[in-house]
Amino acid sequence: MSVEALRFDKATWTAGLKPLCDMWSALYPRAAFEGLVVAPAQLNAADPVAAFVYMEVAAVKEVLQAVHESIATITSVLQGTAMLTATSQEEATALLRGAVPGSWSARWEGPEAPTAWVSLVTKKAAALLLWAERVGKQALLRGAVDLSELFHPETFLSALRQRSARSLGIAIDELKLVSSFERAKVAGETTVELEGLCLQGCEFDGRRLVDIRDGGAGSRELILLPPCFIAWVGSGEPDPYPAEATVRTPIYHALDREELLCTIEAPNQGEAATRVLGGVALFLAGAGGVE
Image (tube, rainbow, N blue to C red):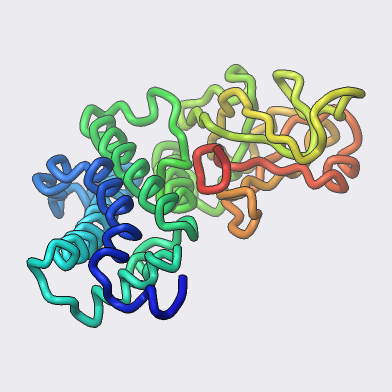
């Protein structure tokens, strides 16, 4: 957009900004969050996983409120009921250029496109309300969880590790992460079922990674995987698979592979070196860039 178009003109700015403002109004769960209070006792819950979930909810509430105030001010300017300030002008011109305002991305570094940013932040916010509801019923880990719904899934894994250490009576640094796509192989009391993982770089036969068959999906194609069962267990516990039947596989937040979540020993048929050369990796399916 030209410099001239970025100068305030009610008609031009309304045409460029109203669709996003309307999108926010439709997606923002305002009633649910404005009446939500996260108590200090919840933030300091004895269960590290519960405390983490409440911290995520409290953090996203602040993000939503800040963005709502930003968009509400821009809307008022467009309606002629508020003066254009330096802050609102900076945020509006960023949106008109198709960029996420710096004041928003400073709170959460999501997708680069404003519409994608708004869509994903509100999607995660709605999901976190359900996480908090399950925590309140002490039922969060009784069913599958999707880590792409979190803003800080790596902190969830750390909280889970701490929770497991307490449950097992083992020091944190004496734990290891095990995983399998077969529930029976990771069936301890600390097991968590993860859903929403995607695979890239090879194929999957329902239980393990396998070579790409003739006529099969290419190495860049994404494959949505069945639930993966993970657990933090004592380092002396047996692994679900022999070392020669696994390959160390990274799990990334998104397809750009810029942010590593963790690595797992994925069950594998074939040479581990072939998987490494093929760039095999897992991704959170609901994260930005993976849909």
